[in-house]
Structure formats: structure tokens, C-alpha cells
Image 1 (spheres, one colour):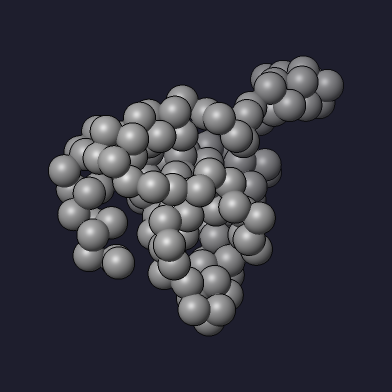
Image 2 (image 1 turned 90 degrees about the vertical axis):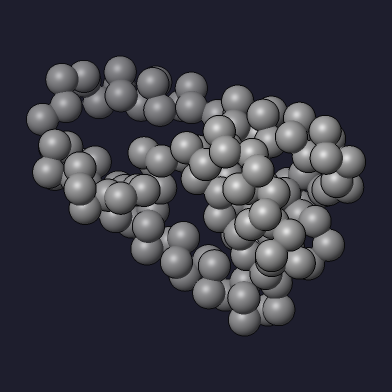
Length: 128
């Protein structure tokens, strides 16, 4: 069970930013260092974090978007967190499928992958 009241949890959740996060700031620095022209938060279905030509990039937190979720979901209280993260995973799959059907290339970069900048760059180049 959650050891916070509903009001406390709501307050904590309201403080979690969805834009201009540390992940995004790191990625902007990375793109600028590579002299890559990008659009931040384009107004496209699914709200991608970045757009480079026809490539849409989503920077996803390992926790909130469920990287290797099956390996650690048993450690979470199932009533809220498991359901929440499973719904995030389901929504992400649907969003990516729709964007690909619209002709976009979709690249998800996980939080832990940002530490491996060379791999991220190769991944981006292979998508273009």
C-alpha cells in the first residue's frame, strides 16, 4: 500500500514535470554539441519530445514507462503502481503505432541510454 495520503500523493505527483526535465536538458545539450537542428515539443499527436525532420524522439524515464517492467513489477504495490505503469506501456505502444502509420519514424530513448551518447547517435543516424 501507499504510505501517503491521497492528498499527499496528489501533491507529489503534481510536482513531476513533463517538460524541460533533466533528461531533456541533457539531450538538448547533446544535440547542440552534435550541431543537429531539432524542434522541441512539436505539436504532433503523441506529444514527442523532439523532432528532427521526419524522426520523432521520445525521451522516456525507465520507471514511468516501464523499462524491463516484468523484472521489477512484483516489488510495487499492485493496486496503483502496476496498473499505472502498465497503462503507460499500453498507451506508448498505441501512440508509436499510430505515428508510424502516419509516416513518421519513431525513436524511443530510455533514460539509462542517455549515458551512452555514441550509441544514441548511431541509433538516430540509423533511423534517418
